[in-house]
Image 1 (tube, helix red, strand yellow):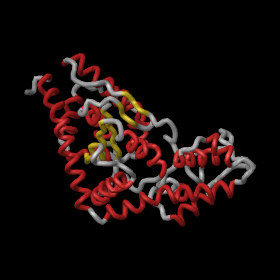
Image 2 (tube, rainbow, N blue to C red):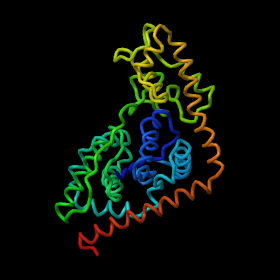
Image 3 (cartoon, rainbow, N blue to C red):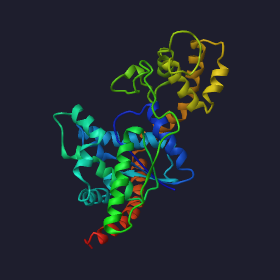
Image 4 (cartoon, one colour):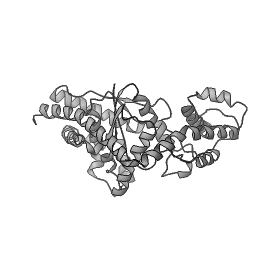
Length: 324
């Protein structure tokens, strides 16, 4: 199966990013034909600093490579290095109804969030995302629920193009994570984990061991001492979800293991698990940060491989549209 997914280069990664995206990518690359990219062109649709963006792109690349992404098993590159993404986005914009773009939930949310920075890129963002996906004749797109609507629009655009110009694109399907797609804050288990909104409740992927232990021991739990997954116990349920995903043990197995034990004992065990699980990532990242040329070589090689596939699709599209 051809898999495509992209990630915006925005700051430090936390365990929610890892469990919701990176872990899935590293598993998918083992048995599929995977194309993964850092979508820097999407990142410039909202306010940013150019120097920070450049730094974030490099740091995100090292983070993904340190967390298990293998450039020998997948294509990994930076979006803007493959010009076909922008060219196909323009071509697809000529068949995309503007009403479809205006009804996108994320567009409405971004307009509210950045009322002084409403640009055309915010509106046409889903067309570029469609181009990202369709260029590679993608079968499955692993995304969070917040991007599901954009993939549905991609399917609509593909169908419309095929009907108008002849069979050209596959209609990709969404691949949602089985669990852990939404990891909640350690301090407010009713809010999604976010470094910006709640740094104390956010556990970064490359956090030092002392900080991991400190944040886990201070994590909000619930009334009572029973370690059980329940909608009425969002605090311990969130911790159980993360424990389960890092340990590979089911939540019911964890409930049995900690039956009759208190939150403190559970948190100590959980801290130890996370420290041990994240240590190889910290070590590998430190090594990669000191090898900037090597990381850039990986991205350049990935871009060249991506360009070969993308160009074949783009030439077919232009031919069918009467441009070649």
